Amino acid sequence: MALLPNTAVLLGKELRTEFRSRELLTTTVVFILTIVVLFSFTFDPSVSESRRFGPGLLWLAFLFAASLMLQPGFLREQNNDTLSALRLSVSDPFAIFLAKLIANAIFLLVTEMLLLPIFAVLYNVHIVAVFPQLVLVFFLGSVGVAIPGTAFSAISAQARMRELMLPVLLLPLLTPVLIASTEATAALLAEKPELRLDWLGFLAGFDVVFLTALWLFGEYLLEE
Amino acid sequence: MTPPSFSPTGIRFENIDKRYGGLYALRRVSLEIAAGECVVFAGRNGSGKTTLLRIGARLARPSAGSVSFVNSRAEKVETLLPAGFVAHATMVYDELTAEENLLLFARLQGIAEPAERAAKLLREVGLEERRKSLVRTFSRGMRQRVAIARALLNEPAMILLDEPSTGLDPQGVSWLAETARGLRDSGRTILMSLHGESEISNLATRAIQLDGGSVVADTRTGADFRSILAFANA
View 1 (cartoon, helix red, strand yellow):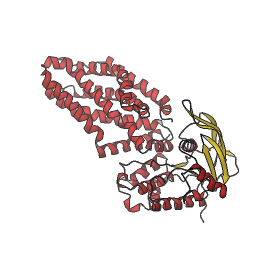
View 2 (cartoon, rainbow over the protein chains, first blue to last red):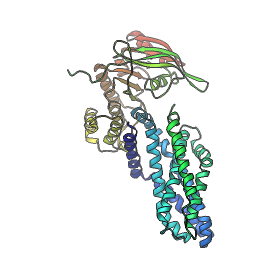
View 3 (spheres, chains in turn green, purple):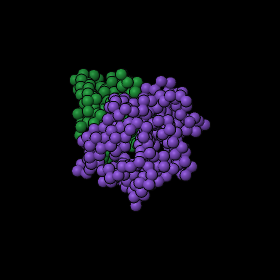
View 4 (cartoon, rainbow over the protein chains, first blue to last red):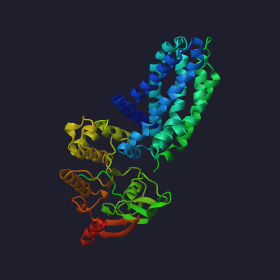
């Protein structure tokens, strides 16, 4: 069973190339920071307004940042046709997807963790007491964004209008993830914080369904 | 002389069609290439050379027909080892060093002792001293050396070269020709697509001309071979 060893090797490559170039992390952190700071100064929200609108704003920023982050995933493999070399080398093409989606989820989660304290300060919300629960919500939400995002990144990389294709395909599909993540985050930032298991269950279900679909059909997305 | 570590393997294309939408890239191509042959595919741009090689490498699936591998007695064999594939695109990562690239692909292919294999190949392609340098700092010729080393990691019985000399300077072409000669003489099957006659195409023992996705000439070397290359570039 070469899937897991191959995934580990490819994940190492993804992390090494990103931390060497810092291309994706820099872009997304700057993008989200700009949105969060801009909205904070424009609306100057009260605590209750921050609790109501903050989670939605935060996840909207994460979603747009993710669409920026996901685009280059497979596009970079086309520069030197390295995708062909990978396809010739791995016994199970799902390893290519698995490594990329884990890397995307890690990058997204790192971005979120960097931005969360800044969001808390600017919007005057308390996150310390619910930090582990927030991490859980962010983890499930990020994986939910990364799985279909990685799949559509593979499709759009081969398309003619690739910059347009990814957001057009991805954003409508991610609306349920956005709603569930926003609701779960809002419940944790409320006056009486609560971990909403119904929304967490929804996110976990979404992740499992799309991961299974990718495992079953991913190979066809890489074919010429 | 040490015996080859691979089983000589040929390839059989049977009634291959490849369509992209309504456009035929290949149309009813049937070829049998015996183990150990060195074949050059010639033809204009869009004649189907690259598509045929990518189908041979199992990177593309034919729309119709089948591809099979044959041993030296022309019997069908199942081969799990991919062919070595070298194209104009280097198929290596610019953001990794030469050594990291080879280690990456060696580990993915499950090669035993990947570090030793990578070091040996880097020595053979003359990049031992630059093994820790990022590929993006390399010249075109050096990148192509890394590409050749990557293609040889699993000691393939068959090498597919898709216009590998594009962009190389005369020294690079000479080095590539010498390397291809070594591969041919070691008994490997070589399929290559080239534009025009060169040091590399002169290694071929058979020339096949494609036009509009079909085979229009198939000959052994000699005067016919040269006329195929000349015609292909007319």
